[in-house]
Amino acid sequence: MNRVLTYLGRFFIIIAGYSVASLAASAFLVVVVIASAGSAAEELPAMLAGSYIFVIPFVALFVAYFAFVPSAPAILLAEILGKRDWLFYAIAGGIVAVVVLGFFWRAADGMYEVSEGLDLVSQPAGRRSAITDSSLALLVVGAGMCGGIGYWLVAGRTAGSWRPRKDVTSPAP
Image (cartoon, rainbow, N blue to C red; front, side, top):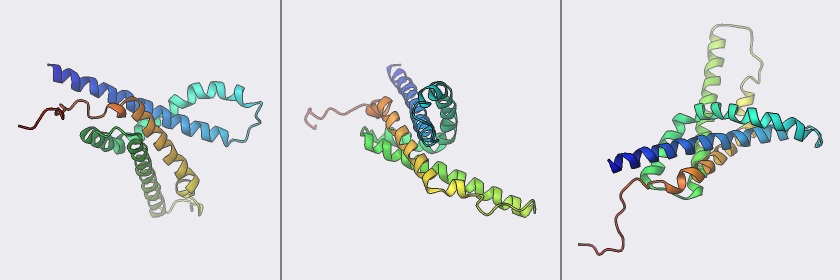
């Protein structure tokens, strides 16, 4: 019964870590996009107060939805190997972001092929330019790295704690 409670507790810590990771990635995305909007410095406090409260959790829902499948193997690997360093989670978050970008790139490619096959209205030449834009890719990878560090803060520092540890001080039989 004690092991079941340990596993259940670890599962809840992983869920909390994933929630914090989604919020951290969302906060990074929102702050960078609003900062690049080009508003005057005196307008920012009034403009940002309401938007941060609503937009960050809203965008976090989308981040959590799209990053769930690619992040599950990274979380599983970290738990099995007992990785506890922040750099592993930052790199894993960046890799998860690249995989999410790949999903969007393939989806945009598929939509373009379908619309060509149906002979719809001709598409503009730069239809996929938003997805293949390097600044957007770097923004998403940066958000993934922030999310990875957010996960590490909550759940990564105790990764692998559910496994029974062998006592290294006792002599081998």
